[in-house]
Each structure stands twice: as structure tokens, then as C-alpha cells.
Amino acid sequence: MDFTVDDTITELTGLVRDMGEQLVTDDSLRELDARFGPGTEAGGGDRETARFHSRFWDELVRAGVPAALAPERLGGAGLGVVGEALVLRELGRVLAPVPLSASIRAAHLLDALGGCDPDLADGVASGRLIAAVADGDAPEVDWAPIAYAYLRTMPDKLLMPGEFTVERTVPVDFSCAGIVTPEVFHTEPLHRDPAEFDALRRRVHLAAHQWGVVEAALERTAAYATTRHQFGRPIGSFQAVAARLADGLIDVDAVRLSTLRAAYELDACSSEPAGRKLFAIEITPAARSAVASAHFWACDAGHRLAHSAVHIHGGVGLDRSEPAHRYFLAAKANEFRLGGATRQLLDLGAVLATEGDPWEYSA
Image (cartoon, rainbow, N blue to C red; front, side, top):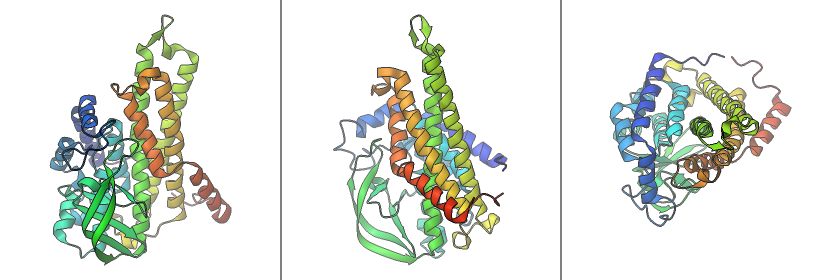
């Protein structure tokens, strides 16, 4: 399998990395924590007090990043789930609190309807209008407190409330989320495939974000291990610490490869690569299994790396004045959103028992 990407994706991810490193600094995240972070959970009732990096989001929109990842019929560049995953990895590296995944998912769902409000679809696709997409039947919805549009998929319909209220919640990473109570629903017919594909896309997005989180956490931890001295030596020179960092590198690679494989398999499901239409997609066992594998590694490796980062940093790893604790919280939040690793092993075991190796005949 060839994971080589084209120049457009390479340039886009490079742009997002440069912007993220310049704008999403430790100082800017510390300011967001002061608005809606530890000790301020009762606040955050609107966009101005939410844990949302509005400046970075505005720059992403101005640079056309959400628009590039939108469906081609809404002006996107046709970069596929692989392109989405590589960009979301960059957001994970800097812990950028912006609703790019929700924007991408909402744009593709609205595109699948075909006849929805063009102004709404264009606004969501470009990122000018922030959308929130419910994850199945889960009551908590990421980005709902600052969303203009709210979507919930069901097997045969898409629910779009014209009016809704949100009760702010406090996820483990203090991200922007809330419980949505719809007041007026607009129901649109939706083929089953878009709903299932959206669920798989969400899991790949979370795995890609986790890839960036643990990759950056490992880099920061390794750098700390070269500067922190005990007994006159850097702690990174001790065998136990060096071995744990080496294990972390293997874990990051596992998340990287499984996530890219899952994204590749989802893209390969499309019968029309040049003009991807969700309702024309036949989701293969290989794609479902690849997503489950990425899901497993994002949870399992993410758990180990989050704890390794804290342990190697020592007490500093949990100090709110230092950045390490944010990576721990982000990795745990992604693990919780995905639902844990054990369930995925059971699901993969069931696939192997009933269908054999789903990748035997895949590309």
C-alpha cells in the first residue's frame, strides 16, 4: 500500500503546521484555559468565553483550509479522507481547539442531501458558519455551544433543528461541548450509507488527531529528558527512561500507520474517486476493520503515551502552568470519545471469525 500524497496535500499540511506553530502557542492556550478551563467550568456560555481559538480558526478560514477539505461539489479540492487525516494530525500536534472535523463532516452530510439550503452548505463548507454534528445517539455534542447549525444522522434521515438550546458540559480536556435540546426539527431523507460513512470518518478524524497529540507529546517529553538532570546526568540517558521513549516511538508509528490505512480504505470505498458521492459508496469489511484497528491503536497507544509523558516529566507533568498536562488531557479525551480499545478487539475478533481476513484481497 502506497501512502504517498500529492503536492496539494503536502502544501496544505505544511501551511496548517506553520500557522499552528505561530498562532496556537502555549501562551494562547493558557489564555483560553483562563476563560474556560480548570476552575472556570461555570462560565463559557457563548463564543467569547468558550475554549475556542477564534483567531486561528479565522486564519484557517481565510486561508481556505476548510474549503479545500469540503466536498468537490461545494468547492473542495477532492483530497479525500487521507487529506483530512493529515491536516487533523497537524491540529493535534498543537492542540488547536477549532471545529475543523465537525466542519468537514457537516459539509459532506449536507452535500449528500443534494437539495439543502445552498447558503447553509456553502457557509459550512467554507468554515464561515460553524456546525456541530452529533455522534450517533450521544447526548453530548462537540462545538454545540458556538454552532450556527446542528446535525444529527440517523439510518435514513438527517435531522437539522432550526432552533436548539445547549447546556454547556465540561469534557475532560475542557473542550467546547454541550447537551443539545432541539426545539424545531427539519427532517431530510438520507441514505444509510452517508450516516455510516460519517461515523467511520469521525473515528478516523479522532485517530488522526490522536496521532498528532501523541507525536508532539513524545517529542516534548524526549526534549525534556535531555535537559532534566539527576545524579549529574540527563534522565534520558537512564535505560528505563530511554526504553520507555523508544516504546513510545513504536506506538506513534502504530497510530500513524493504522490511521493512514483506515483513511486509505475509506477513500478506496468510493466508486467515483473524482467526484465522491456518499450515497454511491459501498463500505467494505476491509474499511470497517481498518477503522477499528486505527481506533484500537489510538486508544491503546494514546493511553500509554499520555501516561509516559506525565511520568517522565514527573510532578511538572501535572502542573497547570506547564504544557505537558494539556497533552495528557487531550490524549485521554480522544480515548474516551472513541470509547476505549477493548471493544474494538472484540469487534475485530468477530470479523475474523465470521469473514476471515478482511484485508486479504484489499489493495
